[in-house]
Image (cartoon, rainbow over all chains, first blue to last red; front, side):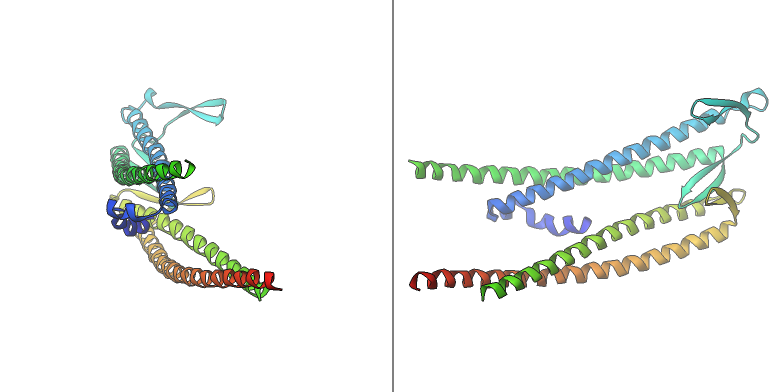
Length: 163
Length: 129
């Protein structure tokens, strides 16, 4: 993907766009549309990931002030619609999935740091993609302009032929 | 004459399609490897950030098994090594397939021209007969 955009962008300057014929321009536009679609999908996925990490982080806040004693009671779901009362034995540590099947036991504040880090990372990636998407849509707009121009140049010719 | 060219053209198109298929397969593989590498990098970073009192577990099937942090680090490093070598291999495959695609494209064009010329000749010679 990145390779494609690297080799293409230099050729996509306006000077080159006008030298392409209509068919090539439409193919180019389709390609750009497709790539923009991929960017949109990635953004959507990242947004979901971001909200999941944020949710996990805010769940931790519920655990932190869990004083020893009555504060550590929870309801454990046995099925989707049935719960039993349980008690948290350990309110200081949590297990988090760090990927590829590895789980790390961390202290609650450390775990909070982990989720903050993840959210920051995902946000950074989203910004990068947004930037790329912006550039791509600029190129797309330029291509559309040239297509329209070419179409308009063609119109009078057609009219003349018909007359 | 035309039939022969048509046959050649057809086999060439089939070959071209096959190459295209392989190319897309390689691209998908590359993307998957890229994702795996990124995930492993993230895991390695996390493992490096762990404090001495933190434990690491590995999910094997449905059970979590406690693992030595050093061992986990080594495992991840080994896996990253493997993935990078695979990535290199797939990259090479992609470049060769790319070249193959280009050559097939060229021969296809040649055959197409030959086919057109043959057709023209055929249509020219017909009225005379």
